[in-house]
Amino acid sequence: MIRHHPSEATLLAYAAGRLPEPHRIVLRTHFALCPACAQTVRLATEIGGALLDEATPAALSAGSLARTLDRLDLRDPAVPAAPVPVTVAALATGRWRWIGPGLRMMSLRPRDAHDARLDLIRVAPGMELPSHGHTGTELTCVLQGAFRDETGVYAVGDVAEGDDTLEHRPAAMPTDETCVCLIATTGRLRAQSWLVRLIQPLIGV
Amino acid sequence: MNGLLDLSDRTTRLPDTIGMSCDPASWIRAIAERGDRAAFVSLFNHFAPRVKSFLMRAGLPAERAEELAQDTMVMVWRKAARFDPSAGSASAWIFTIARNLRIDAARRDRLAAAEADAIEDSPPPPPADTLFDAMERADRVRRAIALLPAEQAEVLRLSFFDDRPHSEIERALGIPLGTVKSRLRLAMARLRSLLDELR
Image 1 (cartoon, chains in turn red, yellow):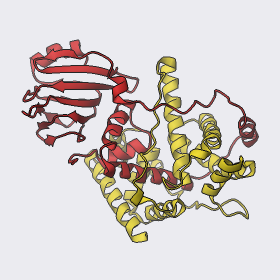
Image 2: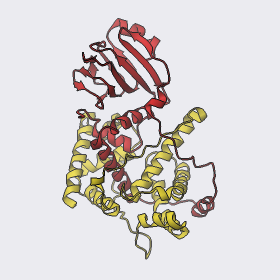
Image 3: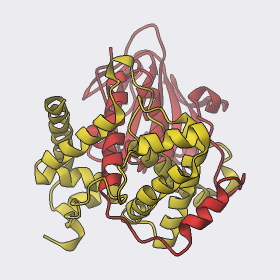
Image 4: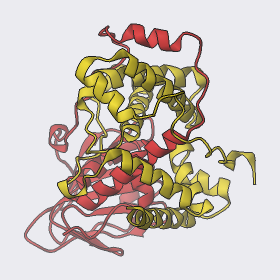
């Protein structure tokens, strides 16, 4: 039972193609477990189609149709082949880096041109992270176990959405299972703790 | 209200191919079944100028927008057999192709060949109980958007066209981010209930 969903604003931005790739991967992980959000994205895609229909047609350059017709029977490289979907499993080939006691991270996508990155984080049961915020947006999807912070308890499939106003202190639930989360972030970590600020450059967050 | 937010070009309605009814789904089927070039021309005449316009409004320069509009139509030709009218309308399908090409082009422009793998952001297939006629659905969505309160329709459009983060949209609209988000939530809720009423 999914209890925490991405905001409508985020789902619309996904459908509009306006989210960085790491955030799209986190959302697709959620959609696989959440028919309701998958349904919302389909509706948002229909909205995109309706807005396309009502767009004022722009004048095309002379010969635009003829040039396109000429390309129909070519296998030209100008149009990329059908893209291959990326799965988390296919990306998770790196190693778990030790960050602190009971805390490891694996980088799946390094910081890209949108300042976005994708990581897996693994937190031992009951382990609490130091209080921190973010300068950008953070999308987290729980893959295993559960965690809680000031905004609620998050279990498998749940998405936590944080922006630069969120200041939280997440902790893995004290169950048998290690908590594993997929996290897409833009911007940097903001932390009060001198210890976190000290290790920040080392772990690149 | 400033010019940026003048979204009044919502007068254009679907049928515009002279003397022909506009049925994009059947054109796509004709392409899939028999490589029908006349159907492609109809589809091109309807959608290519709109895809170009859409991409320009999303911030692409005219020349780039036209290239991608042509690429989109070539993709439509090649992938016609994969169009599934039970999964969504023709307009939504073509919108998805254009959107993915734009994402892909932006990525290649920035990252060159470093990114070998690409991602297809198609919405997941619908569960069987939500299937209904694609034409009817597209039409209902269009009518529902037209019935939305103006400020809700506006945030909805901005989230598609205005290629800026919400923090800048909030500045443009002069309302706080929380309000943009809650307005979007209201717009989607209203849209859903309108869709139920129009069924």
